[in-house]
Image (cartoon, rainbow, N blue to C red):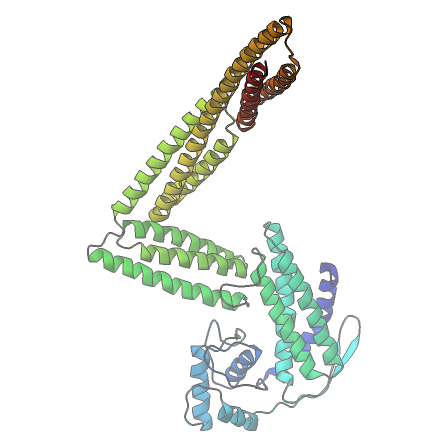
Length: 499
C-alpha cells in the first residue's frame, strides 16, 4: 500500500517518463494495435487510441469538446463512427459503415507506421532506456498516460471527498490497488514486457475509475458504468438534461390538452433543483457525485412525468388517511394513559404506539413531497399500529380485572374451607368426648389443614404478583390457591364422614 506522500514523489518521478512518451515524435499520428472489432457503444483504451489516430490523421472525431484533439474519450459514439466512415471512404474501404472490423483493421495496419526509436528518459531517481516498439507502443503510451493521470486525479478527488466528510474507505482501497497496478505496469515496461505493461496499466485505470465511482457511496457500482471520469460524467449529465427536456415538453403538451399537471410541475421543480446540485458537483470536479446526483434528478423527473394527470383526489385521500391515523393515535394514547393510571403494564402498548408515530411522520413527509399514494399507504399502516397499541392497553386492563377476580374467588374458597375445617374440628371434639374413635377423622382433618395452609401461601403469592402488576402470574397463583382451598374443604368434609 502506497501512502499519499510516497505517491506524490513517485508520480513526480514518472512525470518526465510520461512527458517523453507524449513527445511529438510519438504522437504525430497515433499508432495502435486492435485486438477486437469496434463499433458504437464499445468502451476501452483502444477506442481512445483510434480517436487519437483519426484526429491526427485528418479525420477529426470532433472539432471541439469531447472527442476533439486532447479530449479523446474511451467510448465509441456517433462522432467516432462518422470519423471512421470518412477515413474508410478515403482509404477505399467498402462498405463505409463506420464499423471498425477486419477490413478496416487490415487497411490500418497497411497504411500506418509505428516505428519508435530508443529513447532515454531521465527521472528524479534513475535513467531509463525505453525499448523500440512497433504495434503495441501507441496503446502502451495511451494506457500509461491515462493510468498516471487518473491515479493523480483520483487521489485529489479522495482528498476533496474527505474534506467534504464523504465516505472514502472503499475508494481508498481501490485507489491503493490502482497504484500497485500502475507500478506493475512501469516495471513491466522497464523489463520490455509490453503486453503485461498494457494490461497492468489498463487495470490501474479501471481501478481508479471504480474508486471515483465509490466516493461518497461506498459502492463500486456507478450509475453510468464502473468508469466515472470527467468525460463520462459530462456525457451522463448531457443525457440526463435530454431527459429533462423531454419531460418538460410532455408536461406542457399534456397541460395544453387540459390534463392536471400541478403535481407534475411541483415534482419537476424539485428535480431541477437536484440537477443543479449535480451540475455544481461537476463544476467542483466531483464527477462520481455529479453522476449520482444527476441520476437522482433523472428519477425525480420521471416521477414528475408519471404524476401527469394526478388529481386532487389523490391528495384528498392521503389527507383523509393522515387524519384517520392521527385520530387513532390520539385514542391509543388516551387508552394507554388510562391503563397506566390503573396500574397496568403498558410497555408493549407504548412500543406499538411509538411505531405508529414513526410511520405517521413518514407519511407526513411523503405527503409534503407530494407522493400522495405512498403517503396514504403509510398513514393506513400508522392507523393499524395505533389500533394495535390501543388493543394491547385494553387487554392489559382486562387482564388486571381477571387477576382481581381470581384473587377474590380464591379468598372466597379459603373462607369456605376454613368454615368447613372449623365445623369438622367441633364434631371431632364432640365425638371424642363421647368416647368414639376419632383417629381416622383427625388424619383427614390434618390433611385438610395442610391443604388450607398451602392455599393461603398461594393466595399471598398471587396478591404479591398483583401488586407487582404481573397479572398473568397473579391469576395462576390465585387459581392454585382456589384449588387447594377446595381440596381442603373436601378433606374437612371427609373427616366428618369418618365419625
